[in-house]
Length: 572
Image (tube, rainbow, N blue to C red; front, side, top):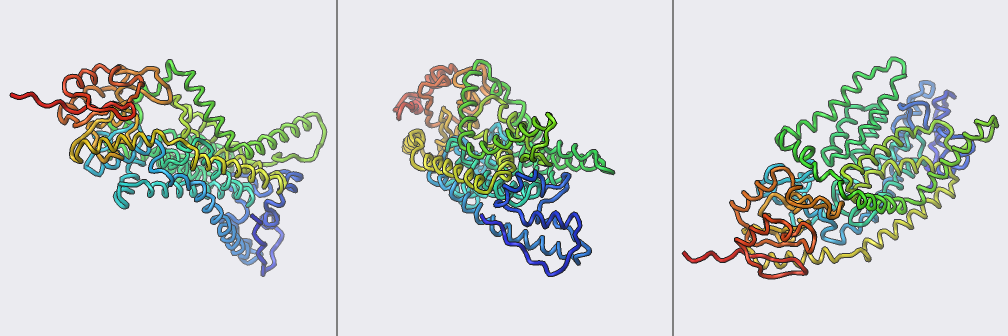
């Protein structure tokens, strides 16, 4: 994208440091990246966390100019965003296009859709409608279904696209404020490209990480501007979407702590605002849903699920596979980052030897410490529970994109554009994989199974799908007979750990007594054992096996799934 044209000034300004910096930044764009590499970094960054990049809604009035700099900055802001916004909108639309190609991408979407129907039917979250996740996304699905109907996930797909776009715009604003307009463009584009750099079922689904990322970027955006109460609210939004979103609090606190050396800067009031903003929304959610239930389902009730005993090898292989895929999907931008880092290391080495080489890229005030802390905190959050599902890695993408943008601005215009073009080709390959090559056998199986369930039951009759695919309830339009929508709650089975620590004794505390009461109170008309040889199958689960033997008879199989119907009541 060509840099915006310079705005013609109608008044004469005094050459103050502020106006000189602004004027210098205005003559800088992606095409001038090579000259920046020769003169050092930080031309548009200033010397502190309160400094503003050129025209980022922060132009300061110069009395000698009669306020002209404010008007010029505002006009430049408008022109910048009017050019960047359509580009990011188009890029987001293209990268999210595959999400509309399937009715459902992964079991998380099916789980949320089934939860939304349960809530619409009068269910109570964390009591008759349960999951190990915070409440924000189930209620978002519920609201979307109330407005647009519950037969399709297209409203959630649109919402996910808007979430990616919002993340890109916020990150572009953050990068522009620190490093100039070129960096802002790079950051927005890099984030959208990185958002699909994993397996399609992890990137195209409208699930937790996609909606958590904008909250984390907003928290950094607010903290960078010293809006601490709002930064806290954004941290709370991230936590209420998915617990690991709270990792962004670490770089936010770092930004606050880094200001302690400023004259007359007291940490007390900002820290109080940050704390109140972060704690009060979470506390309100806990009070709304019942503090004991809220804490159990979102924090304390997942001890066995969080353990990797006996499955560390499997977990590490999954981590390497998904981490490697993210690296491959972001390889050109990552290569640019590594190149700039290597150049900096060499420059520092030569400086220590007493020579005076030309300034290397990034030897100025790059202001990336907090971004590296953000990346490290996000990586630690990915490791929580040792599951390493692909969608967990989406939490890394904002920090990766921001670091890549900071590096790209030091390359020549031609090199930076080449890196973005190469990454776009990689993204095009991933989109092709999602549209035409990604397997759909499991989706087809769940749809066939749902058709069979629908043909054997009425809408008023509850069913039990014993498996790990709750989307079957949504496809079949049948109510679950239990609040436990997957067998994982009752056996601790998880795809992230294979068959380690699976069985009734590893179930969530109190799950089996509650489950037995549910079956006694309202027996399911049909039970489907969809384990297909997995270690949580009915044959490996004594309580369920005995219940089936007493009350049900085997009636059919569908692609390996076994159907059990209620036995006829004996004549009196």
